[in-house]
Image (cartoon, rainbow, N blue to C red; front, side, top):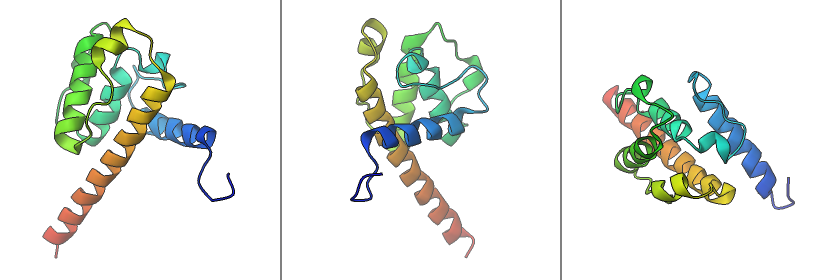
Length: 130
């Protein structure tokens, strides 16, 4: 860890990768080991979003061959439900090479947006139970 108690870029990558693996561990078709090829079909993004918003779509109907739909679905639901705006373009992801730093940046933004949404939902539930 760096001296100012902020994790290094490498440590931040490792932590975020572990979070992705943890969130998606119950999704058989998703195995995350890196920020490039394991996100290439969009299913990893969909699994992360589905973990937090399981009623938003039926994950079991998704197909790894339909990359465009997977990316578009994940980015749209993330924007609608967690106010995380798409920093990645599905066309670029499909027709270009996945850039590790771009995927990492989007996932970090997604992580904070989803954690923030989770906190808001918990506070709402606590208020209802008072």
